[in-house]
Image (cartoon, rainbow, N blue to C red; front, side, top):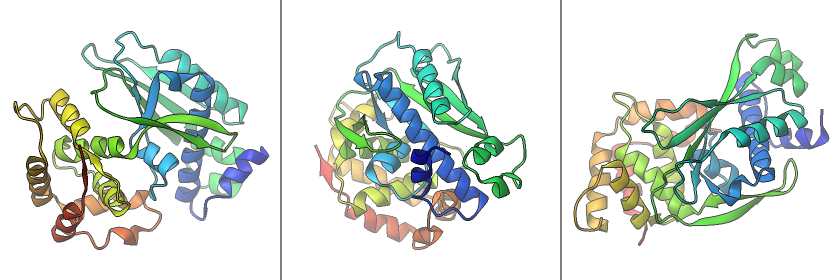
Length: 288
């Protein structure tokens, strides 16, 4: 096994098969970022979403997909060359993967691709043979990569640095802009009877670390998605009323159940209740 990969694995407490898979997924995500950096992707786009929060800002839960936003709208953006760069990078570090672009619908502004690999083969690559023998031979590890080619305006970015597997840089949304994207998901995402507890976990993480919410960027996101069309700007009072309504509607038990498999310590969600989230909301700070 490559010494750099061995060093990356040393960061994880790997006891169960899920522990190994979570560690593998995160290492593949970081190597994919390295491949995108080599391909100069971050001259045109920025990293955002839950995986950005995990990899670059220390979020204490695992994340599955990788979300990116172009720095400016571009209808003719082509994801294919970057998928090739990611695949080449992963294979260079010993991971046999494929990265395939998904055919998008005509009206979608999202370019998507899937990074896929045989889980058992990946485990053998990191010399986890005993764990690999307990995994179904056809099980796949998948990571979705999405690029928003028509991003809403008003976000801010900063450059972050990763040191493994080699030192490289990543352009990413700054925390207030990331928080706005997460809040858009909380206020506007509709999953039918399903609840995405990861959104609520991340809300607590942002507030607990004193990250302010960029209200102007949240408004831009909500206007673009059709969830806010008032002539007046979205003010703090209106925003807080919208958040309070979402908390009132939240199925806390379902949210906790959804997020637990992503947590290093599931006990961190035991305190959840409507009263808890109302208290968190009161401590949320606004940046305009």
